[in-house]
Image (cartoon, rainbow, N blue to C red; front, side, top):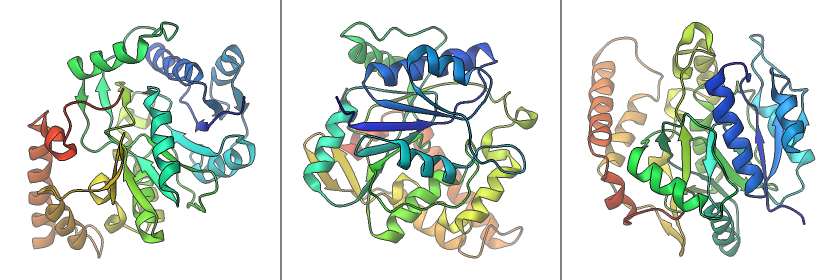
Length: 314
């Protein structure tokens, strides 16, 4: 049977025990859901697990001068290789539930071009997960809602029709900036920019950053600043607050107002000439960022009011 969704990913090397475990969990999760999985890159262990799980292995990927795979080439190859009508770029530590397919049904009924991403539930996972039981989606969701936390900023997947005319710069994968550009570009192209959080239940398995240069997080890497430049600057670092629609199990609705949105508009306006190195704009940007970060990180339940729901689809 032809799959409905093809997911493309470029995993980290499988050398670190924890990274190996959470990436294997993600790939088994995608296979259990019946997704067509394209594994890109010749990192240590990638071919072995692709063969073990019967996934499509594509080792040859264009890279930048630092050796980091380029998303533009991954997207190009994925379009050529995918057999499903829907394509998804996803980080290799992300878990989904069957509600992913319900999201596709809603989008197909709506018609037109949509780009979907959403917030994730951060969860500590230190064991191999079993997706053979029929109740695993409910068990995973209960655990994430009980032990995890909704991340206010992370965007770890992008779902769109394979026919979407998406052309991206040569972004380095696993670095900051490219995901924000995806949101900006969707808005600039006039597509529906959809926040799928209520319907696409996403669990991010927490991990360290020892695999990156200096052990620093991705957003502190020099390649992230290159990504931002390729995107057109800091003013194009859009977030889910710039989504035009919310994806509910019942259908698409316009994104509601929230106190965060005026702060975001102010922040983007201040960044239109780049991030200032000094002066009143720099001070004001830092004040704005502290305010919205404190507002989101201090209240685990803020999402209930914004999304008008008690719990997401699982």
